[in-house]
Image (cartoon, rainbow, N blue to C red; front, side, top):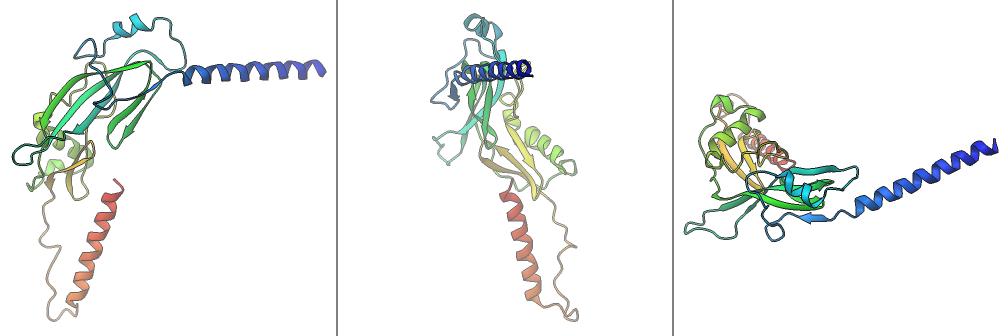
Length: 234
């Protein structure tokens, strides 16, 4: 019995030592800000090149993804504006060597824990403006709205929004269809189109209906508040 307890104690010590060593290995990986002031272009543009990581980190081991890793897009609004206060956006794709983890802020990549990071496919383009166009029938639903935002609202961004070959991560443009088709890019919210108004859903009260105008106004305010609350949590 004493030998069994001794063996169990030895195993626990070995396990704890291995866990401590692994935590030290993981902790040794730096965390990089992937914002424009902190990241450099990759040696090869257009793809996350595995040979660059292999040359630098041939003997790296650990419980993280070894080799090259396509992490995702970083997007931000450029501080400069045009003569008509037109917004311009900048976007690039981030590659990493021996990535451990990544963090997203809103819908854009913000930091990566890895041996090193770099950027490819950098673009500067004018951001779309809000549209009052009525949504077509094929834009109803979240999936369809995402397609509408990418194919119509952000049609000039098609090349910039294309994932490099073999890479993944979070798509740069998201959407929802709660009040129409709203496109999400970085922390921007751009109205792609609006839902058609159902004229039969709102009618003025009849004189003989017994419904006071104040009740109708209260209903409208309640509806607006509900929509605003839904948008707040998106």
